[in-house]
Length: 191
Image 1 (cartoon, rainbow, N blue to C red):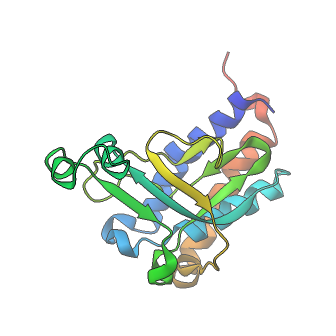
Image 2 (image 1 turned 30 degrees about the horizontal axis):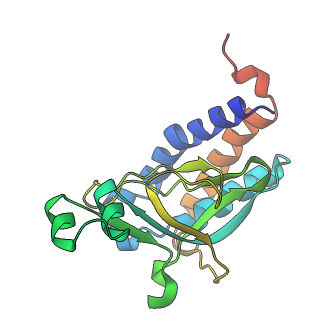
Image 3 (image 1 turned 90 degrees about the horizontal axis):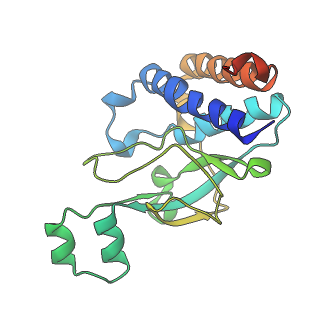
C-alpha cells in the first residue's frame, strides 16, 4: 500500500468519521475536561486496523501543543506578559499526575510511522493548531507539538463504558471505513 492511499484513508477518517463520532457521542455538549473519547476511539481504530491486517496499538501519551507565541514562551524567547499580549496558548493532553481524568491515548501504526488521534481538535480558545494525525511518531512532529512522548500509564475507557450503544455504532463505522480502503484500495483511487 502506498503512502498516498494511507493518507487518503487517514483523511477520510478525519474528515468523515471523526465528525460522525463527535455527533454520535454528543461531544459538542461536553466541556473539554469531560470529552474522554480518545481511549475508546483509539481502541476502536487499532482493532479495525488489526482486523484489516495492519499492526496498530493504543498508546498512552503526553502531548503539549501550542501556537507559535506559546512555543516562544516555553522556549524562553518571550516573557509571560508578552505571551499573554500576543495571545499565546498551550494545551496539555495526558498529564495523569493529577488523576485519570487527564489521560490521553492515540492509535499508533508503527509500520506507517503515523499517530492517529481522532479526538485531537482545536479546543477552548481555538488558538492552538491541532491535527488528528501526523507521520513520524515521536521522531518527527508537526511544529505545533512542543512535547510528545509515549507513556506507559494505565488507560480507562470511559466512553465505551458509559455509551455502549454509541460505541457499537462507532465500531461498525470505523471498521467499514478502514476495510473499504485496505481491503480494496484500488476502488478508492480517482484517475
